[in-house]
Picture 1 (cartoon, one colour):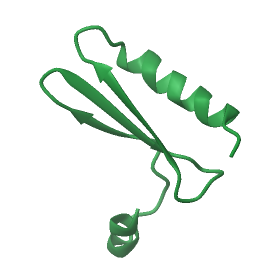
Picture 2 (spheres, rainbow, N blue to C red; picture 1 turned 45 degrees about the horizontal axis):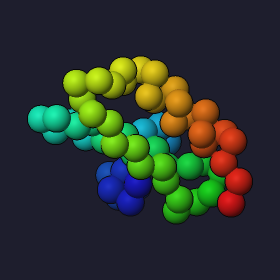
Picture 3 (cartoon, helix red, strand yellow; picture 1 turned 60 degrees about the vertical axis):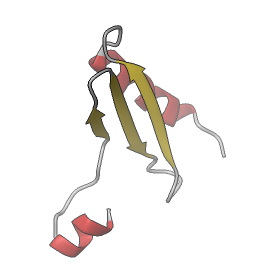
Picture 4 (cartoon, helix red, strand yellow; picture 1 turned 30 degrees about the vertical axis):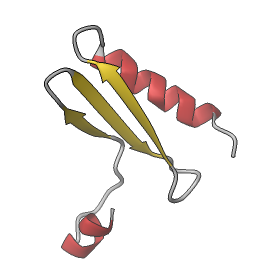
Length: 65
């Protein structure tokens, strides 16, 4: 987020995806709790990326801190 700010890039990060040989990592900053994020690791051979992203979004909406 700091990099985006320093480069003058507008908009908010919805999520970030890191793909490894056998894993998918989804990082989603929470919009209601500044500095907090959700980090999900999935088995690439069994995961459905679209469903996982929706689930992380749902978790964020229900999150209470």
